[in-house]
Length: 290
Image 1 (cartoon, one colour):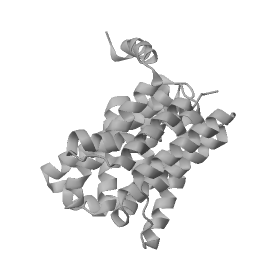
Image 2 (cartoon, rainbow, N blue to C red; image 1 turned 90 degrees about the vertical axis):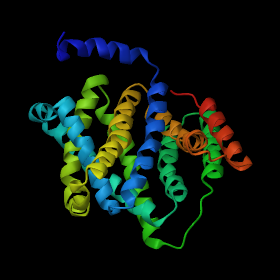
Image 3 (cartoon, helix red, strand yellow; image 1 turned 120 degrees about the vertical axis):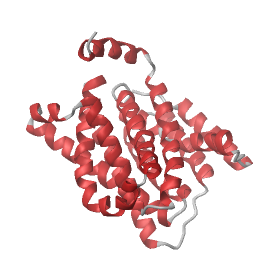
């Protein structure tokens, strides 16, 4: 059976999996990627790490999906959408690393979550959903314990990352409209464009790592864990979830990070953090999609 003939079968299997399951896989790998990035931060500038993440993801997508075929047949409107998403991905990943270089990860993550809260609020159509947002937002606040550090450039990068994350959710939903392989092909094409956008920003800083097998392997791991697996899972989830529902589910990310900290790093949460996890779960449970 050829790859082309297998795709409808795989698509049927993918459709039988609940979209929330794809989101949970994305959430787990979203935090495994930074664990690999710890090794790279000791040897490579933050923008170089961002470039390695984008480049390795672009190579994996190119080999897997051959996205240039879609680019050649896409309409002008589709190409414009892909260019916009590619620019967002390239800038968002670069600015995220600039932010966490200057601010605690919890602060950057809390600021980043403001975007999904706004999108979920815009999509809320009932008092129940508004209550769900309030509960989940308070839970995230308890989890992240936001600390406003006296670092103006760091805060500027964090808020820029928040704005770009909102655009990623909006544009990601637009390319996921057909679902399945179509959304993944468009994502692969956007990742190639992201590499073009990010190369003038971070290629020079990544050069020291390109001569080290260990650092290259770590860079590939960062790309696969931080961009390939979570972005593919996001597409499969976005195709079947409303934008507001997906935005609210993002409030699970801090809870997932806390759980990974317990299992992998042995970092036991405080009472306040456990309360935050509980509130996030309650908020997600309260929410109802249209």
